[in-house]
Image: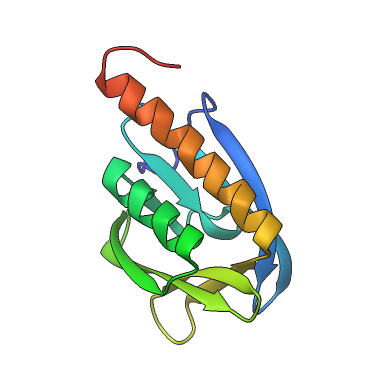
Length: 137
């Protein structure tokens, strides 16, 4: 069983966005079973799921708030460390994973969806920090 197949629904949130290739989709933010990391599942798929630790969550939130371009090196269950790309896209913010020309994804979020995503990431961050401190929210 891969790390991405073990699921905890202790903290599970969804946010809609637009896959720039296929259209409307939903992405997920989930707490891992051990409550130390968050899964970010772009388009709700294991194929495009990465793990975020507390520091990466903070960096992602800061980049989204600043409407900044950036790259976060984050773990992927099958590919090791991968680059999660953050960038403004027209009036939206996008998150992307580009493994190969054929295997990639870019999800764009409106301002409202970006704020919702930031809220979900912040909520997951609180769980992680709380778990390290011996308690949970």
